[in-house]
Amino acid sequence: MNDHAGRVALVTGGSSGIGRAVAERLAAGGASVGVCSVDAAEAGQVAGAIAEQGRAAVPVPADVRDPRSVAAAVQATVDTFGSLDILVTCAGIQAYGTAADTDELTWDQVFAVNVKGVFLAARAALPHLRRSATGGAIVVVSSVQALATQAGVAAYAASKGALNALARSMAVDEAAHGVRVNAVCPGSVDTPMLRRSAALFGDGSAEGTQRLVAEWGRSHPLGRVAQPGEVAEVISFLASPRASFVTGEDIRVDGGLLAGLAVSLPDAPGGSPATAGSED
Image (cartoon, rainbow, N blue to C red; front, side):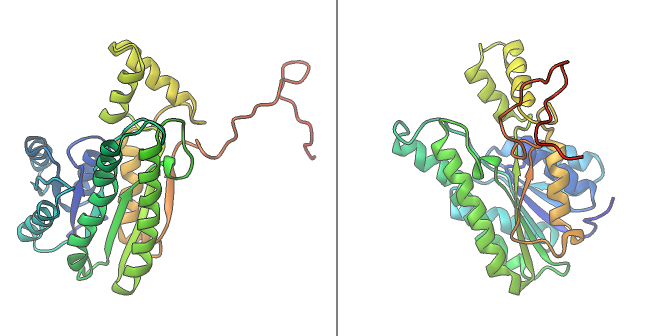
């Protein structure tokens, strides 16, 4: 589907996980893509792989914590392709700890990447997005942990809650300029970051990591973790003119994770689920 034909996108965190899937999906839809990553070699590898498919992509390495670096990545994308229509912010880091045991450096690092990085990218991109002939769009990759939280992720959950608030604020401010802003809140997604977490809490083996990823997947009603491409499809829609009246939203892509309650009824006699309180 050429839903992004003739458009230009910049994807931060574009070298792996959800970000790479987004860069590939937007390019497949016809967009020219700036692949932004703190790792220049990885950005080049992803951009090269996209180009090998006959699509337009350029590596634009940047540290999203550095305003000059981010501004240079935005400008490089515009200089290469002539405009900017889409910004997708996927760069993020995970950290574990409660408010009692998280040190200030960790807190500041999480917010510098997860929140300040999005602010800096948006600030640099907005002058160009406002001039988009097809309507500018920003999609912020947040998390279900902006809405509900597991134990021991105080900095991460706080940063994702801040992202949802930032996306709403930008949506209101930028509506008059024709720019839409939405947040996507994934549940567990099979990315390098998730597997690093699984290795940290598992036994360290590849088999143990896989078992833990599968276990986390079973906590979702769909019974598995997402693939990055599944999240990228939602992001692609939100970034496209097909979502022209959608702004200020935080869209869950969580396999039903937050739709249910962790309370189960005992089986009724005969082994079937209890139906007390049901209506015919």
